[in-house]
Image (cartoon, rainbow, N blue to C red; front, side):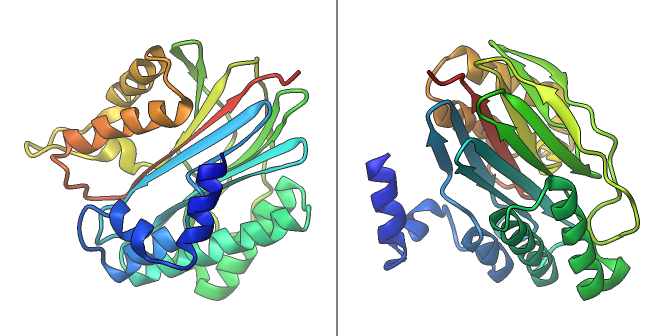
Length: 264
């Protein structure tokens, strides 16, 4: 924890850590996306959240954020439409609107609606962002979350993907005009919820074969069965996605792995 904090502080005054993480040169939009990223792990007694964004290097659309605030863990994952600079600007505004409302203590439904409103007013209805935002009560293990037209997250219990968590989706952020459902799920100690973008399962190999949800679920379960720390499990799972596509992603692939343990 202390080493991680030291790296975050040092990274504010040097580009060394950022450059080392890159496997090759990035486009401007992809670089903007990485600049939005929080620490890849946040943790507190009873909870950990680990995120990975594998960039396509010339695409900028995915982003995520997570934080632990008192007895609440907050997670958001977003995928802006399109590619290029416009996409990265769209996701930048979306994630910063979310952060603003989270820090103001706004309820999920209010924050969800505010992101939609700000994007619609700024970009019109030709641009949109899909995603999910969630709050986890660390004492009760109650997960509340909203869904803006995004692939459903996975519930992992033990070494198995137990189910997809259900939530009636609203329209993607920026398209406006819909009441949002706030879904609730009761987690058990040790449960994980895996959020992800469509670049995870829509990626294709050189023959055009799609990675698909079955392979993604298998990668999650194999990583869980190895029982390393959650961050290692996540990187192992994402590694399968990257290798399947021959190290050349056509779209960003982002995964956030949230784990709840009942603290003493």
